[in-house]
Image (cartoon, rainbow, N blue to C red; front, side):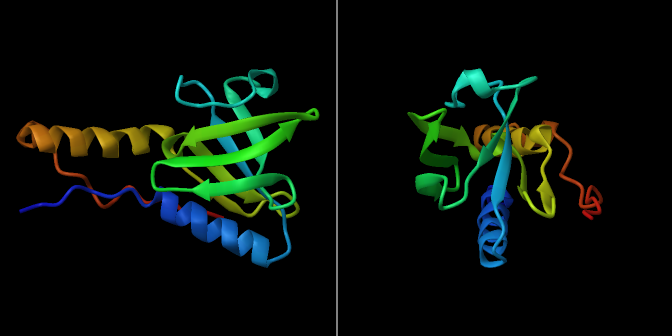
Length: 138
């Protein structure tokens, strides 16, 4: 019996966040802010995206869960509780070196759609996921 696919994105985000911090660098994330579920200060959204400094010095109570990235931060001195579905995190990188990883928004949505469809029994109408969609990250 096939099991639902678990997204690898939150695991990769947590690992890269730790690696960036352990390297003494500043972790930033780029978020697609085009969803009602994305709670960020809209004044800082540019072309549907927002760049967030998620370093321990910049935020409080950071949680990178399997479904949501949350923290308390300040934007121009005003406190704000940020909440972002993990599927809307497009990039995590080190500010100083630009090293990190990019994610495809549509790919994450497809994983959730497939899991939902298979729980309804509709999976026979969808092709099986392919393993040849990997990308080289530099």
